[in-house]
Length: 592
Image (cartoon, rainbow, N blue to C red; front, side):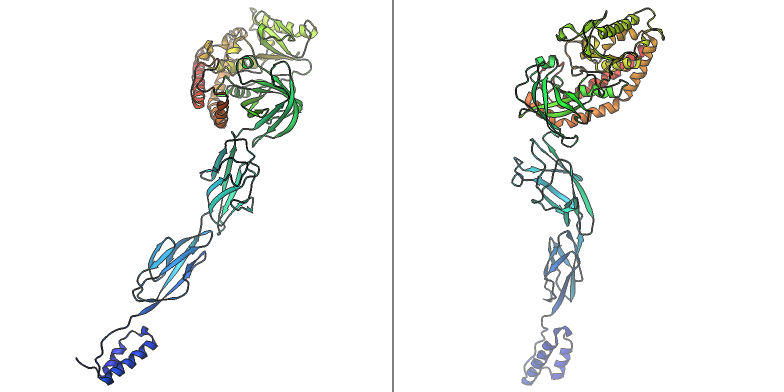
């Protein structure tokens, strides 16, 4: 084997990578020199090399290890990349090269000095989850998870629970969650969820996003609490008790006040287990935003499984020229601690500055039937109708009695006279024509079974003024919800055969006005249909709770002409019936 001289050895050393280090170079020089002196054979071996890897992290997180590392040639090294709260890893760069898997970054095989740099980005603010745990909220029976839809989280508590101090649990992406500028901690900070609560998620970069937290308590309706010292078993005798209203989100609440309550209605009181009531507060008070008064009616709407027929009629009344139409609002009723279902709380048809304003000299009248007259009612007759004097209280045969009975009979005599359509001396000199036209059309659109001649046909007259029809009333059996008359069907005239209306339609001027006003009502059809959908949606939980008590869906209830298994089908039937009715009338009025 060939031996190298010292010069050759030194020459070989020059080719050694300078990165071997000064100490290693000196050691090799000594070894080579010793080998030449001893005559040993030198093997041409190059020692293993090493390189430096320098790591760093930008704002928003860290990388570990974060000191310069010495790595052998061909080896790889791994780093742990950790974002701070409110940040996420946006990438790892540098000259080393490598791959990021989760929070671990592994370099390629190292062949030279290189760098690794972790970068972070502020998280977009996101509310990921919102819930209530029964453990944190004794008012709740079970855990409650919210459903997310865009920037809204919604859930429903299926009981009448106290929601004024609930502690939510939530997860989020961002730096902070706040309500009204106050930081919130999941599982610790309570809020009042009576109203929709806005939770704001903020990022470290100052970007924020607000989420609406909508918690529906029970059915979402206001709740009326009635308490009496005895059962209500009569339409004549009041029972004393207390009233209070939890207005929930839409209405002003009313603390406990004294009241009296009795039954009301005719077939609705006699035939059905869910009873309607008349309530009399100790003093005038506004309820549900309606003008102040003492007396309020609680309609059970038992026969009307949609619950909205009276509400629909009231909507038509508000669109009309009628002087006054009752308002109504839906509420849950808890009677002596027992949930009694959803009621339609309405104004009463009665004299009053905020109701039928007949002043000090006027009369509120109702066309009625002998078997519906109460013992203390005072009434008179015309050739066609029995007319009950609802207000004021008058003496039978007294001066006021004679005044009103004489005037109404005189009007009817003129109406059926040969010269009835005379514009100066005919029936128009006695009546407010537009009120008769709109009263007729609303009842005809609804094909209100009672309005042809039977009952709830109201009119009012103030001496010195003209007779006005209205207000409208009692439509739970309207819009086809009857099985004992042709009023079931959406086609065909019904109220047109009321004797007064029928005679007026012989006047071309009255008929022309009917055509004009029907076109107006028909033009409102899209908005009316839209309102019906909104009412049904508003009642979606209430109707289900109501049916769980009274179990009317899928069952015959007098006098339903059709029976459907679901609330949605009942509402669809009503909507379709109304469309068919309006379409038929659009053609029929042109033939008047």
